[in-house]
Amino acid sequence: MDRKRFARLVAEALTTLPPLFQEKLNNLEVVIEAWPRKEDLEEVGLDPGETLLGLYRGVPLTERGVEAPLMPDQIVIFQGPIESCCMDDSEIREEVRRTVVHEVAHHFGIGEERLEELGWD
Image 1: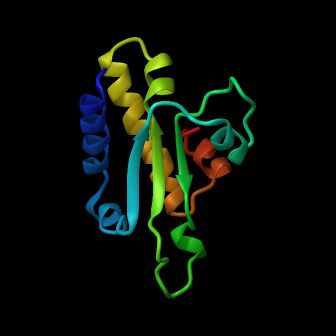
Image 2: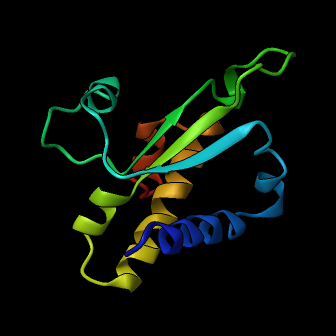
Image 3: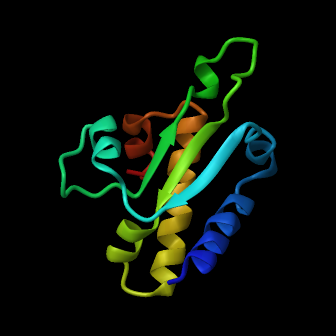
């Protein structure tokens, strides 16, 4: 899938979030990268060869003070791993949505354990 089409899927996934959540996504940058770097894997405790579909970099809203951070938080969606684990465009669309929601949840302070409880592991 070309990058432009993949980017449209990411944008589409963001528009499916409830308005209350969309309103809180200011100062948040969503980027697409082809593959995670070794440093990205290390950042989340994964070994080389393990799969990383998305990554949240920043300070969750639940841990912030009164002042907004100067730099935007960032959500990275990794196109290569998502495409590799999906069989067709329909699965890619669903995995992109799932990954975007997962990373947005981290922005709102929802950790991995809670996401697992909610079925978003």
